Length: 102
Figure 1 (cartoon, one colour):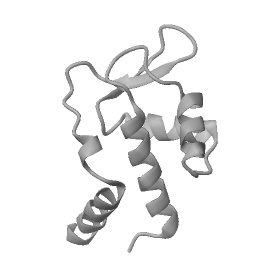
Figure 2 (tube, one colour; figure 1 turned 30 degrees about the vertical axis):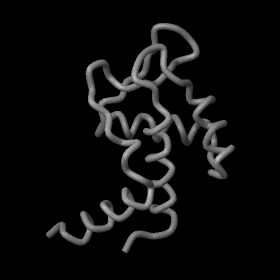
Figure 3 (cartoon, helix red, strand yellow; figure 1 turned 90 degrees about the vertical axis):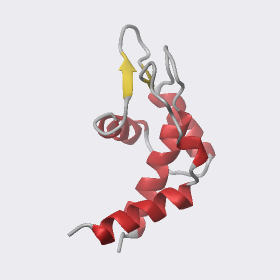
């Protein structure tokens, strides 16, 4: 079963994905950090940057690094259904996936 820390990470990353806009210039790691802290996630800007790098390996999100501050956003043309899934549903899916893996 997933630990409390990994559940908290999953919920935080899910919330981060929901914050990302669908086009450039995107939202900065600092803005994401502020919004997450406002939602009672205790997270640093560096942790948000690490999470974004990790999430970009599995999701169609990109960093607009053409000018500072860098902004993160969904790739153009990507269909996004994330807001329709609650954090509790996302956690349930993650737990089911872990149990069903051989």
